Amino acid sequence: MRTRSHGAGALAVGAAVMTLLAGQAHAVPVLPPGGWNGDPDTGLGTGVFGHIGSNCDPLHGNSVTSPTDDSRGKIWRYHKPVGSGRCESKGITVPDSATGRGVVHDFTPREGERTTYYFGWESRLSSTVDNHAIFQWKSYPAGLQNWPVVLKVVNSRLTLIHRKETSPVPDTLWDRALLPHEWNHIVLGLTLSGDPSTGAIELWLNGAKQTLRNGGTVWNGRTWDLGNQPKWGLYGATAHEVDHDIDRVRVSTDYHDVKHG
Image 1: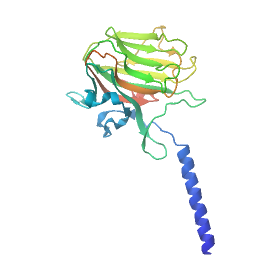
Image 2: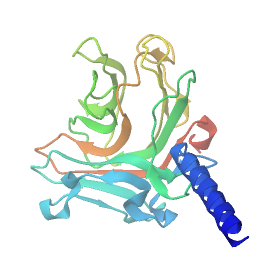
Image 3: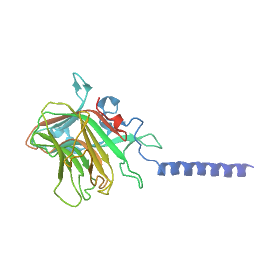
Image 4: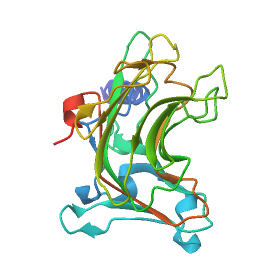
């Protein structure tokens, strides 16, 4: 009896372990209900982001901090001093579907599915000097496009750019005059696809959907390159000191979770 009982127990434990391992094997990072909230008052600090780059090291004068704004409460501030080329965060942290632990979200499109992600945030720059990016949809590693989509400042204009896989010359999809110290709410919609005919880019500014260079509100193009992750912060403008403040940072597959207002 003792031998049989011990064997049955071992089988049960083995089955439980196999079930757990199977669950872990299929576990995927998932956006929480209502989307991802990247604000500093979540209690996670900079842990809401997947990674804060070494280029934000305070020893070099760079920083990502959460100062209190008089009218908004805590906000994120990316500070880049003169002589520094960048200070950015990379990725977002979400619960693992099996363990509940925070993991970096994997945006890889699932085969046969067409998913649109909406990235929403409020942005304020201390200076509108030219830069390389205030937001990047960055490839890891570089892939064919390196950065399929960026928002940057060119000639004091907020500019949306798409980089094709077939040409090093990017397409400017949209631009708008930008003032320093001015808050603007941005929503970038990306339908992810490695096929230029099914990938799509949309943009809202302060609640209004924007007309793009093609005369419509949707630009079709390749939006999934390789391991793409969102990057907020500052890149470029090495000769200048710049602060980039962001607030109400959200990511969802539902536009209404991230919209203005």
